[in-house]
Length: 353
Image (cartoon, rainbow, N blue to C red):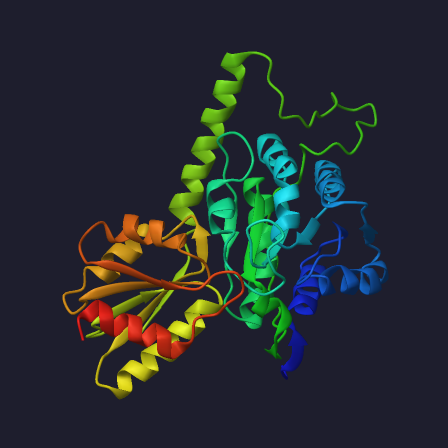
């Protein structure tokens, strides 16, 4: 199939529609406003529902309701807006409701800047709401990967009854790249017998709820959720690694910084220094074991984490490397993007050159 030139945010929306999303609730915020704009124009054509809510808080609660009724539903926002959704996301995890949540990250903290950043990593992977819960978090590095992962995001949400977050920086949302629209067959998923679709007098009513008055019942619910999260850890780790043979430097990066790291690796190669790039595609569950194996390679002398933040994923990198090699960090925050040459220089410093 021929490739087409797409803007990242518009490709997100089109991919969601093609993946069967039939309800979208959201509120505009830069740098993701093209997502609701596209949904407003195209969702009705598929028989779906688009509604611009009065706030991000309203949007996530609309998502809760639509998901509880069995719909394939999505919302999107950018960093401060995602912060406003955190209570609803926790409720959805507690009630085991599937949905896709897109965060096109901008600089922070607070209102910050509209420029691209990766300062929401902790919020996405550690949970910004209350309680013991997790999200599956996918972190595409190209617009093609955004498109390819969208069907999978909805399928994972339905399979595990869990919200799935697509975590990408604003650069990916705003840039344009060629995209090939491939047919991705939907997974063979069970019927949503738990959804509140009406009893028709044939069964007891389903109840969607995250409230447990009895502490033993709440504890049992948390234990069951934890078993589900363990299954996700076992089955849903995703990563990519390039040019591993004889690499002295192992870059670890996700999203746009992974592209910067690949460019830095080429610059180092011109100086006779071989570098590899380890890229988590899912940042939860994080591929700790695969990273440990990559960093344990005898030729690797230094692990360098590259981020558009003051350093968040580096904590997971240190857990994965587990002391077998030194870990250093290069990053910029607040919408400033490190250059490939700065990244290459950080690698040389880590090697003592």
